[in-house]
Length: 408
Image (tube, rainbow, N blue to C red):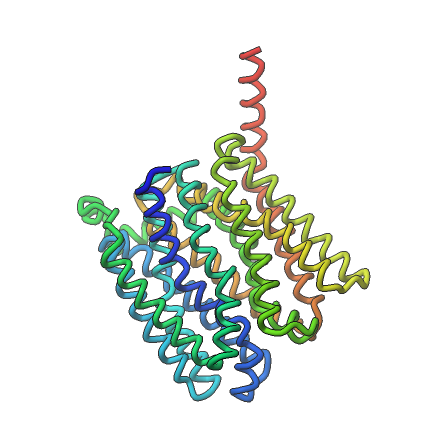
């Protein structure tokens, strides 16, 4: 890989990690926030859901804006808004204010997650785009792997409010990166062809594209599984299994590392087997793993170690699904990459927020609702893969067999 390729992956990965850092560093603090603000689990989870909702809604604006004005201006606006929301969270006097400022924080956090995907599409397609996205995810992995641990250390040293001051500083660093390390990848000539009307036409086109919607939905239900884990794991692992915040952060990091580590093989596997085949096999492995986890729990095997091991395997398969479905969904829409990235991100995150809300109804203090919910969305993702890619995979296999026969 060339130095510019690695440099771009580093910059885009760090920018993409800004929003998720505000989620992952915050997770070990959820029980402590509930106690400090004298509120219950559902209200604290509402602060997480508020972030997800605004994080999703904002992408539908930032993506098209990056097509119209270029990739950098929306990043400046979004990250600045993220910093304002983070400072507000640090100063929030009660849970209502915290939920409100988390919503503001999410409105800003959408920009540095949606625009980098459009930049990847500006620069590459196919296997090369998958490699860059996987490299981006490797840098991005600093959030789910290190953020919970850093968050637990900050809580021990200075309390939960200090987390938001640190996140504010991270946002400021993001602004510096955009200003000094990121070049504009949307040429002025392309921007001239983009406006609000063209954006609406782009959304209409994308919503009629069954393949785009199918691929987006596959990734959405896969990501929803991770969102279920995000929203419930701190309560399950800390309150049900008795882990300390620091032990929880280490357990969370193991599963996140599996997700990110597997994603690094996506590009090479795509070159050898093709993207449709990789998605089909990985989604099947993901669904089967999560069904095994649910079966163990319902059979009375409610141990921490079996759960972490099976999640490690399942999230490893999921790490192959997310970058490949994203690349495939954007491949046919280079001229409207910002709008396509925005719609994909919005649909996926809205689904994640809805799933979190639904799961909140079933929370009972045990691991069962969490593992059952993960299994359900994993099976839905597998069914969508069958519907979206079944024919394409069979066609690719026939083509490969024909080529092998010709060589023989």
